[in-house]
Image 1 (cartoon, rainbow, N blue to C red):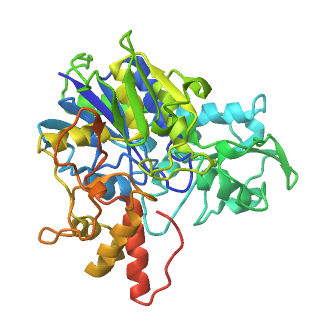
Image 2: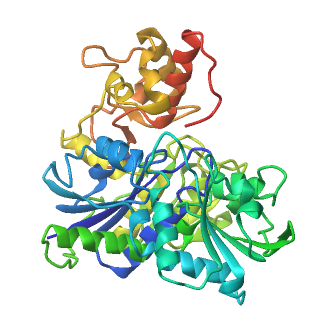
Length: 484
């Protein structure tokens, strides 16, 4: 029985570090060889949750939400987007098991203690206040439950801290009042977040008084913060987000094991039966040219660098593909992987079909799976009105866009010259096709081994966000400038 693990994260189109921990934990689990396949999916990045199962070949799939709390996202958004019917769902011949989110596992206590000791090495616990910080919101009573549970576990475990407190960004007790809440000379603050994104690396440092204004993303900051910071007569130690801890990979596996035991499933052993349907001939996909080498390995580079082989920087790991795809030639963050802005100047040499498939899914997530299902006529495109109609929260207004606005929006926002290389398979609705799309935005009529097109099965989060802004403007509202 072949098995796959899908780790689902939030992701971001604003911050390049949001998905990094999720990918890092997937890399570690993949290295251990427990599953036949290990993939990531995201709410605000690629591959989307509606695309991910098209990538999976295995018959048994475990899905672990890489989320801190059990609330709106894990109970509503993820099941809806993944088309889950409950703890166990049959989808296109696969048995899918939905596991608990990582943040509620008891193993998180061990990670918090380790992180506190790392950030304040050799500082006596009995002279230290540990503050665990979350987002907090009055809209979701579950948002703080995971943090409150960890505070209780650490207190009851008598781990030696002078105080163990919880604090939040948007509700009391507020993290900005840390110096009023705590009494010990040393204060260790650990953000209970999955990634060093906008909150843990930009917002909370301002609330603590470490920065006067939000800084750039963690990976783009040349000078890492140094501990301790002397503020309000205290030594303040600030940690990176708990989700960046390497041991999170073990928590993810623990959640799979708990799920397996609940359902009485046998122990897992990789079947080794996964094969990637790759031709041994040279082919192009998006802005990448791929060539088989005489020893059975592969080489890939930007299509416009074919005559510049000697001047290209060499890479040899499929994980390098993720780093290459992150920024364009000018250093700008590529929020859409299928944008026609892939950077130049690199050559990636890979030793196996598995490595090539992994690298391609970093460059163009789900592209091979979507193309295979389109060829087999097993792809189920989701029409625009259906996509907009299932939006909730701040994006529920997106479906108020008119048909005329929607048609113009798609022509503009999906333009292959400036925005996206994908070929659209969906319609405006079940009755009405999209109008005025150029030929390069439509799926090809014939299959070719020389070229693999990038297939779009559903409007992306960027299109949903633009639809919301257009609908709000048409209704006379004040449109937000925030990206999805």
